[in-house]
Image (cartoon, rainbow, N blue to C red):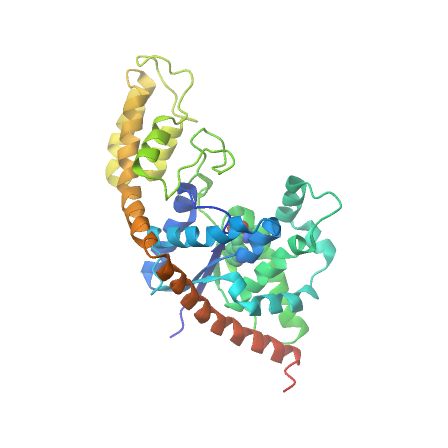
Length: 340
Ligand code: TRP
């Protein structure tokens, strides 16, 4: 019996932080353990290189780090195919054929691409590889005939573009080889995107406001103790604010069902006055460590044998390649370029 296929990927541009964990990794592990899907998770190094072509070291070293983050979070290579994009040349070949089906104007209209062009300050010199990355992303998705693609909301335009390419290909070549994927987006934006420790909407390396799955216990403690709370909550007896207070925001994200009474009581006490930030932070630390400590331990364990981690990636890439190569031959046959 064939199961529905789920595929998702990350750009390897640094270690993963707890925002990645609550926003996507955790859910992938849940999906993996449901045993209802065939899952592929991959490191989109070629896509990362559209930004780091001239300084590839960052991408290269992130491969090992992100693979460790995956394993530490609980992705199991016996259940999920974990692979590296650049090791599947069939993806580039598919991209080549899809490029003929997409206009330059359509690419420039992609809202995510548009925002990125403005952010990166390319001016008139947009690298071609950058502009076509949505097409390469369509190749990633379709090569595995993915039915579902769990991604952040910013990836909506990529899924839409992929669906258009699938329809256009199937229509042009009168075939049904390509499968139209559906995006799976975070149900509520709050869990989908964890703000930084400083209250900034985005957790990111450049803002230095994140907690990483690789951070040791002492680092996590220091970071939690320095979190942004309510700047007007000066003395313990002052009434404090919950909205915009990162400690309570994180408690909502990391608290489990059995913690809800305690969290509600703390919120009430804090708003009334008489509850200090040190106490709320210590409690948050306890709640977070319950989840992070086992991840950190597994990460250290896997990191002892990086050779094994790379062998896992190699095996996953070989397996992924078999699937992609089958799709590529179907695609070429549909186009009629299967000459021999
Ligand atoms: N663009 C995605 C991101 O930045 C990464 C990615 C590349 C991806 N190819 C993909 C995600 C295919 C899902 C499916 O997060």
